[in-house]
Length: 118
Length: 109
Image (cartoon, rainbow over all chains, first blue to last red; front, side, top):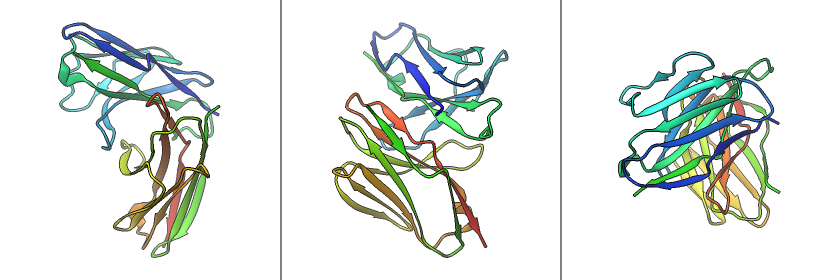
């Protein structure tokens, strides 16, 4: 199967600090990775789409200078929440779209990272 | 270990009823989610079950049996717009989401 991991699983940080979240495709190469925020029992909100080697495309209303995305390789994308504030507390989920597989339309989702900003 | 399984693809007829099954194994459980995802869009929340039984929400219902590690999503009066992928995911004891691969539902007129 296609496995996507995220690290860390949960993080607590002080207001004003930066937090980096990693998303890795473990057994496949991902042309595209997506970053979502989720609030309890609500739909996933797409924040940005990243393609390996190019700049991420951010959804309207998402601050690109606050949520830095780096897609350095076909198996790793990182989301850095800069100068985090309590309102950034959320569940961040990444997904990856496979390269070279018959299921190239399928997104494989990570387990999520729970961020709490104090 | 943990795992979750759902069918890869299903086909149904407009106006009919379809049931999408999801089975899972886990030692810790904090609820099961169903999402609908249209191609190129973010998943939309459909339901959350944490207790056994059936929850109905309009044309969509979701059922959970914790003892059997089983859930299903029931879609009634199918419409063409229901063509989408349906994702089930359970939340484990660490509040991490474990996702199924999704069931692609094809609705035919």
